[in-house]
Length: 462
Image 1 (cartoon, rainbow, N blue to C red):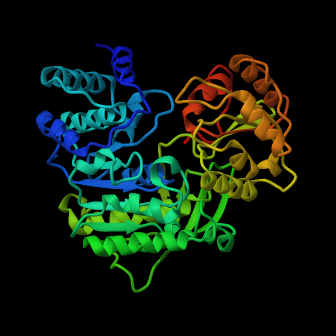
Image 2: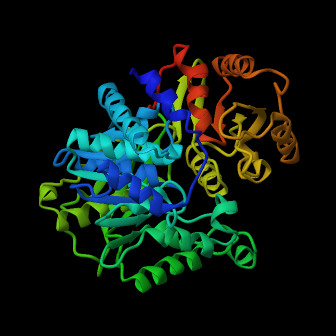
């Protein structure tokens, strides 16, 4: 079996399908010998920021422990979902783990959904590689997520906002309840300060049947943690964003220990330079440092953790900037309203008010394209609605209508994806700036079309 065959086998399970029968899954994992890993596990849940927190954490601890990470989704290849030491697993491990998994499923006459299979694959790969610790991203919600069958020494919630309402509920408090499903008695629970930051127009949202106040939702998390007997762990540092430039591809944070909080076991620099440009990364950096502080106090293998002045993270598609001819391309994974609010904040931090972009946008049917585009309409010169046959995409015509509703003029609507990308690339080469957003599932294809086939010199490659 080669990598292409392994990926086809996994994709045949049908991405996007779900089954909330955790008892069935636990039995399957037990029979496969992966239900009770010998290494400790950290579960990272939340609406946005999960992958960034894991990527920063693994960067901080990879020199003192062999780290296995499970992050979703991928951009180019399924192997990206399973990382060893901050890098996608190698082809040999990927193929061997896939063979073992499907041999077991056939032998036992059982099946898994696509997401369950990729999680199982990660656990098998970690077993094969002999990792010292596993960092696992929660897939959806938490209470019924596949990873909730696993033991854990630490749980994390990175943020709370509206997303997947059809499954998680129409109130932030309901979503908080689902996210809190990963908490366990006597297991530490880290709640990012993003969970307690009031959303824009909080007074209006507090009366809304759809949104609600994120401060209230954060209190719901705290209350459920207490009821479950989980040990709430306060954030140990305040990361103050000092500077950040597109040219350098990094930003600098002042690090201030929080007084009267959990004792600091880490030696921290006064400033940290991070090679991720999103202004929202301040919350994720604080979370990652708090995770490391907690791990150092709990695990002997983590005694030598050092937080350096420069943190280099291997993570793509998070306000990722590239030069292309006389213009630039920004690729961002924003796919829900909170993500677009954060994207708007990033654009305001790095560009003058009169900056304008060609917005390349596509999204899944479960999203509201008008609500997303409304957040960034002030930055749009024109919009290119794209359609790729990945996970129930929204038709181009619907996206074009949403653009018009937001006073964004849609262009290249009748062109196919390849024609659209050739035209957008040419506009960028001639000096237009391009912003790609709406669905992380589309970023890989857009990157290939706009960057990999040309001579783009990267400002920042994640």
